[in-house]
Length: 137
Image 1: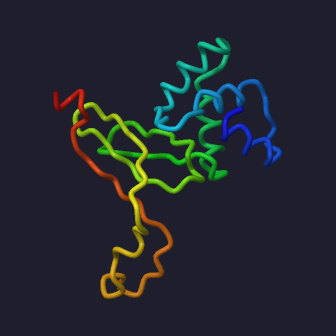
Image 2: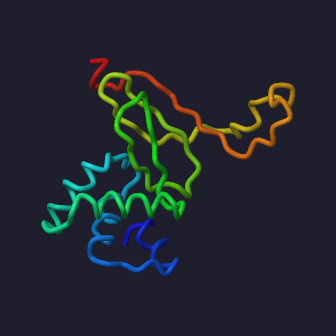
């Protein structure tokens, strides 16, 4: 069973066949699918699943904090199920491939107090950009 499915079951989230298949499609380490990609993969497993059901389920998962909604460079929003594992993202500027990365050190520690302007910083989102091996090749 995927980490996401386990977390949802632990929450007591009502697991309909449609919700389950969406969660199954999102399972994995470097999964960053668009809603349309989630729908296409879900429809392979459950042909009668409606696009609206996928969008609604993704919205619920984001609201619950179980999935992170990503937007990179004005492209379609993508959904990351690794919401409970601290990580940053590495994005290919050509093809849009996204990989999860875990740099060493605390990204909050990099910002000196003098640059915080009185803010109490609670979260850091860092996106590394470059060309993946396929595009650079």
